[in-house]
Length: 217
Ligand code: B12
Image (tube, rainbow, N blue to C red; front, side):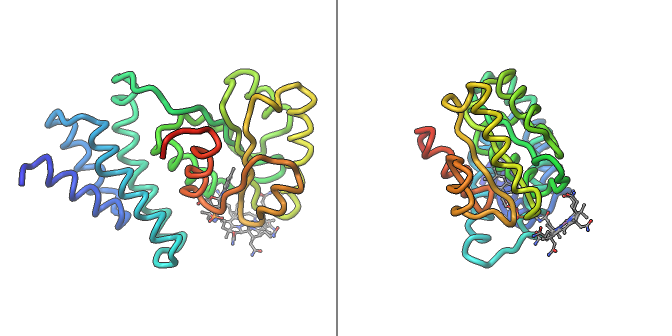
């Protein structure tokens, strides 16, 4: 087996196991050897994270395993991201993401962002404690295909409704898909607040987003 193929295999396995140091080292070696960053991303890292998402969904993996895998992938992405931007690869879509006002939980949001970026979306992360006005401004400024709101408290998921109202009042609702998520959020609550989509985890978000935007899976 060529060294290139060995690297792709090892990257796949170390990412699934959440071993950030070897993932970073192998990614650097791939770059030094002149391997195409898109091949490294699409033939090894993304399939690994998809496998992690599958292991999570079937109950083999839990949040900690998913988090370390995502962190390992983030280490590789930090190296590859600028190189991929250089190749001029066209992102499949633009996504504005934020944790709603009053809420500072960001781990689930960040995990979604990495999954979205891994799937080829450009993500604009507004951070935590994001006001209705800040969501509206970001939609005006970045003109995303979709916006995501994360909430981890039953007291802050009540911010979805006024934020969606503010987006409607600014005349921006028709041009953007709105996704809601976070630990206490359900499909019923998504329907209740009039959002377009809910997903229980990052990989399900990517799947549902691609479906709604008509991007091939
Ligand atoms: C870590 C943690 C914290 C950390 C947050 C650190 C950080 N940087 O995020 C700290 C210590 C700061 C914290 C603070 C508080 N916390 Co807290 N926290 C947690 C804990 C243990 C884990 C949350 C987490 O990160 N999970 C890991 C991620 C990966 O979770 P996940 O749900 O699987 O994420 C996926 C989905 O949610 C989805 N998703 C997430 N966002 C989005 C967005 C979209 C658009 C979509 C589609 C999907 C999506 O995809 C994610 C990735 O796959 C939870 C327990 C729990 N069961 O959730 C409590 C929990 C959320 N916290 C709780 C509470 C009460 C608080 C505090 C009020 C405590 C206090 N008295 O101060 C404060 C509130 C601070 C604030 N104003 O926000 C309660 C909430 C109760 C409730 N139902 O309202 C929980 C449930 C704990 C409990 N059992 O009581 N917390």
